[in-house]
Length: 413
Image (cartoon, rainbow, N blue to C red):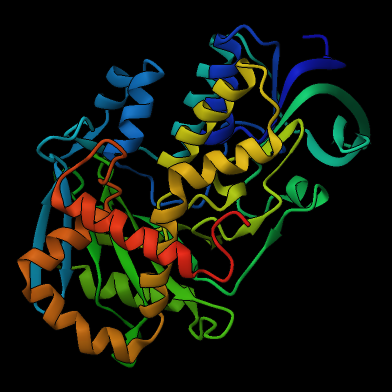
């Protein structure tokens, strides 16, 4: 393929957010180029879980049958403080699918990128964004490096989807604010006799080698191929940084749950990541550029989930570009409209959970209350949709409105 020198839409980053944006942009008739620093297929630190919100976006992309060829989950199982509770994905009155899945990111991201290419986007592997050429406050072109050579692609619109660290976003003024909750997470793969378990599991009582409560959570996501994705994450803020060695914590967690989940062998491919959450970034857009997915900190503070938001924001930004609207303030307002209230209350609740004594005191009582945990697990599972009007959704929105009104720095500002 001849390397393009210009395009209507340049997408930097080919994860779920970037590939969704590229697919929808190309389907809307816009000349689209998607570039990534890695050569695909490539791995990505992630729990690999796909919630019903993510499934809905994959169905919109025409990938329902492909996903269902993988493992299918019925819901979320929560463990902690001597209790085990189940939250089925099915929610009465919701238009979300009643199933979830888990697909290793090596495979998922490669398939999504292929979907973008089949939709008409052109793709370039192994090209890292190293500079931006501006025309006033607009992006005129992005300079990319592959090997020891650099080249430039001019663009009418730029979509920044280069992940949690977002080096291109930083060039454009993106700033991550650590005064609200963030996570440090690690994941591995391990053989399991329960690889076909129809429930994904979350452990809300996470303990270190000394048996002390740690602010965070653990997970086990069955992959249906003889393996499970096992991971652990700790929650922190600038005032209460994570004071734990994350990889030893991961090993302790694996040893603790090993018998129950039929784990065998060593942990494989351990990788860790620092996760900005809850829209805790500013400068998310300019007149002709926008940050989406992880780059915009679109990660749920209560569960670390970001694939669904990545797919959603990819579609939403493509729709805005197709309508020829200026991005800038309109894109920031779109993020706030869709996620602001939910992120505000979620990161406030997650911030409380950074205090181990609070977790120790409230955890047992909360797990004994089916009503409270049904609400909490509904929120943790990203199962409150904009169209929902039931009690859980009303409580969540009520709390979100009051929370965002009290934020010193609301999401995406």
